[in-house]
Length: 171
Image (cartoon, rainbow, N blue to C red):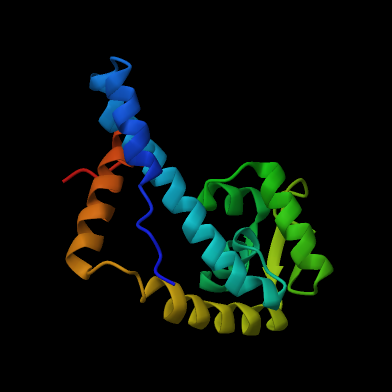
């Protein structure tokens, strides 16, 4: 059975924007909606690969960040800063990882108020396996070529910079 071409709903919405008299905003609406849709597609793919390993992407990111540190430990607040997520989300992710035996939490001996998250050996082994999986099945297997990938990343970096998501080093 032959499948019929499926119209692009975002392009249809863009045309509706133009027809409604919002031509000046139509391309921006299409960009924002496209980025959000691609984020949903990426997340669904990544989550499907991580689910059999008992991880979500948010928990994978915490483990990967901890594994990248010299000693495998960071204050929970610093984890949130580096991953750019709300403190409550980080606390929840770290708590779930601790319940799974992938992270240990303890009071920070340097200040007594903050909590440290430390990756366990089991957490290290899991995050390495999952990183290899994501590298192979997602990050190194995008359905666009390297030149297009570089253009998209450059465009998104410019938007993130303009919105104050990061600051460039002088020089």
